[in-house]
Structures are given as C-alpha cells and as structure tokens.
Image (cartoon, rainbow, N blue to C red; front, side):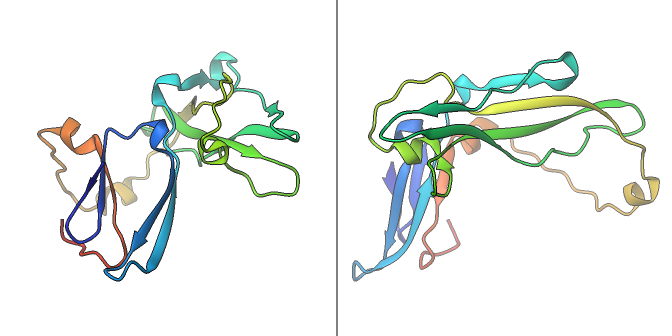
Length: 170
C-alpha cells in the first residue's frame, strides 16, 4: 500500500485481507469521504455452466450471534460474445452476508477482523450459451478504436482509490 502525492492511495496486488474502510482526509485532517472496499479471492472462484446443468452455490447461514444469510449477489449478464452463431455470456457473483433487518454487505466487509473459514464465502462466475442475431446497422455505426496495453499485467495488478480533492492526473 502506498500513499501518493495529492492524497491518492495505491494498492498493488490487493488481497482479501486488505478489505475494509478507507478514509480520505484533506490537508487539515478533516474527513472528506470513506470507501468501503471488498477484495474477494479470485483463486477460490466457483465456476458453473448453466447449460451443463451445473448449479451456483446454494445460500448458507452463519451463526455469529444471529442467523446470518450468506448468498451470491449477481451482476447483470454480459452481452453474448458473438452474433450470428453460438456464443457465451457470463456474469459475476459476489459473496454477501445479510442479517435480519439489516442491509446486505460484502462478506469480508461484514466480517471485518473476524476469522471465519467457510467454503460458501467465495465469488462465482456463471456461464451460459447464447445465440444473438447480428445487428448490422449497429455494427456499421460503431466508432473504431484500438486498445493496446503492451504490459497488461503491470496495469491490472494495481487498484487506485482517488480522493475527491486529489488531482485527476496521476
């Protein structure tokens, strides 16, 4: 973890153990904003393919003082990866915990420093087949651009949290 000039924070290779609350302060140490950051362990990713009859993880419960529900919060399905022929689409799911009468929150944010081992607490990736017709008018009207990152690993191993009063220039 590295504090950068201007107040930004750089987390290189963030780990689930770095999940937590991150605070931004101005030069007078006044509280400006707070980030709730949840890093989930991709090495424990549970992958299923719906068309092969594979099922996502079932909901579970923890007993840390009540009956906490553990479930997967699913992101929307991505678009089909091709048109005019068989393709695939995917969606990511993140581990969440909800206790009665409280709003759900990401598992590791909820647990904080609590050391709990439970195989249900992991992210998921779900895949399914799709068949989408091609929209040739939409294809023709798309702007053309090239996105090239010669050293992708160096860019994707770092996460930036930018404080509102910090410069947008890095």
